[in-house]
View 1 (cartoon, one colour):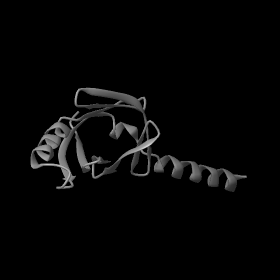
View 2: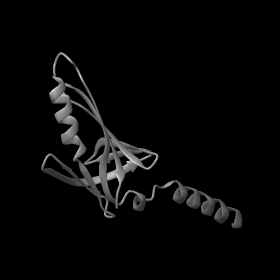
View 3: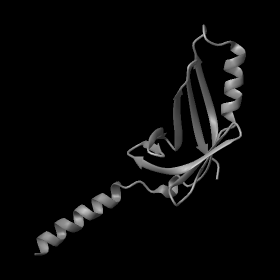
Length: 122
């Protein structure tokens, strides 16, 4: 009997230790770095520069109730998020990854790819 309780306790503790603490995500995140890789035949240097400037203004608001608010270009999208390993899912879709206290998103557009690295500011 004691052996069963010890095994069950060990499994429970290991599962709790593996869960990501959403408190580390909770807060305000701002775009720190923007990388724009557009096809030169589909865009101009001005479009690349303007895209970088616009994306640099992105902001993420992560709440303790597992909601994420994405603010970009004057648009606001709010929904639930979850974390699986290092991947962040937003409204059930892949949104970004956690890496060294940063959130990194990758977006494909008709012109090419945009990678935004967010850092927590609050």
